[in-house]
Image 1: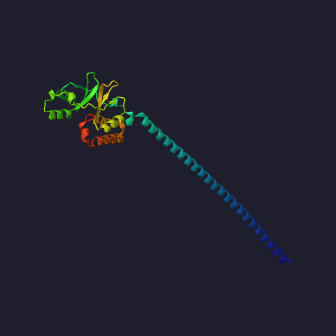
Image 2 (image 1 turned 90 degrees about the vertical axis):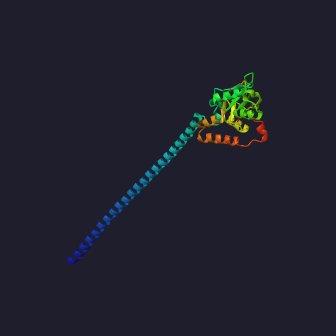
Image 3 (image 1 turned 120 degrees about the vertical axis):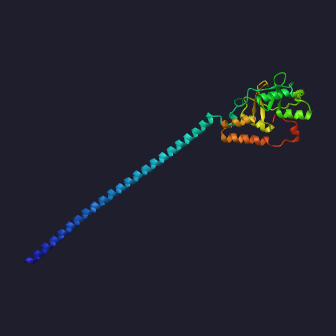
Length: 247
């Protein structure tokens, strides 16, 4: 009768081992499930943190870009407002040549030539008895008159040789306006007159070239080249005989 008891004991021990193994397996499964959840939560947290960093980075980049754009816009506006970069903003009075040397219509060509020599210039405005501008005479006019008339310069009056139809400008005119007048008339110089018509200065192609720095490199070069192009065009025969101003 002892054998059945031994069999029951063995069976009981086997069941106990199975129960213990099952419990251990459940514990391990629980721990694995817990670890999986923890890892999942850690991954989710990492993803959320990464998304927040990306959002902050994108927002910061957009903010920085907007600030840079505003700074650039302000810099351009300040640059344009702070310096006379445009020809329309430069007044003739700021760059015209002075003091001005003039001669009278009743002076001789010899006197006009002496003024040009002393002042180191190639053109002189001519004034009438009232002191107002009535013409202009150039060194070329003197040479051509001496050649065509066959007389000494001292015996020829300025009034007989000078150009009477003279283009002029005001000291308050813009450089842009003066350049346009010079280009239209194809002249290299413009007398500058006061409100009552008295000459107070002269602006020349050389003055415009020297003022190119005020205009900025590109605009200055473009305006000078544009004026040179207009001056280089050939005149018609009628225009040569009726020059509007000094060359």
